[in-house]
Length: 288
Ligand SMILES: C[S@@+](CC[C@H](N)C(=O)[O-])C[C@H]1O[C@@H](n2cnc3c(N)ncnc32)[C@H](O)[C@@H]1O
Image 1 (cartoon, rainbow, N blue to C red):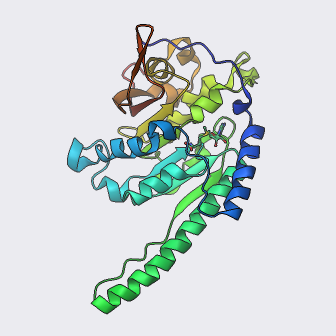
Image 2 (image 1 turned 180 degrees about the vertical axis):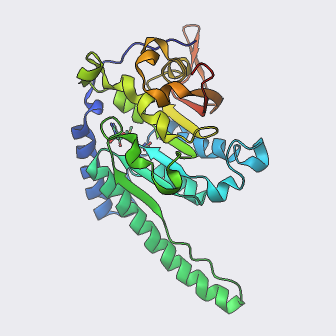
């Protein structure tokens, strides 16, 4: 079993203040120029497009049913530490039509993502109205879908996961996404007194596991701070902590079902890549 990796040196990227300041700046930029929708993390590696492309392959028509039948119309998405919501908007644009919720602990991020959602729906409504006119002229059916990506302020480590599990998602989300958020959490210097003063990042897996639908839901994590092997250590390996986790965390586990391929480099005889995306499926833990 992969063992848990050692910790990262804490940095300001592990503080809420850093993210609030960043999104405050991005809100101002967006107010001046609505086409400026802020930072796309890991853009150099084209991570967002690659994650979207990867998920296409999990649609059941192509890949043996890892997502529910008719996945593109039905699969629900939860984006953890959503930032400007760019990944969810990208998925919408790629034709995924199920419920989408982006959460972030920065109030300014949520404000920013909602503002972008509103400006997208205005654009859609305008182009939709234009298209409607054109279609009516041509005698075709109209198609004016509203933009319906939801955003919510939520601290993954402090707010109970149950706050995100209601209605159709009471048994979890079909796809839970994390692009750069576990990285940020891992840079927090905060410790948890209830867990013997351990770094808060250590409880991340236990916090997110209930959010993924048991028996098939997917969790995709993209990181620039951890290698693939280290991510396996955090999310598949349990190590000594497993005994301390709650019932849910013992009854289910993550198994790796795929990864996104990125260009690799060689340095001093060692092969590596600048970014990693692993995809896990939540399955029953036979040891429970
Ligand atoms: C590197 S950014 C990535 C943003 C977005 N996922 C993207 O790819 O563009 C990390 C995000 O995680 C959020 N974050 C960090 N710790 C969090 C926590 N405990 N709960 C919720 N969000 C958190 C930050 O506010 C920030 O938006």
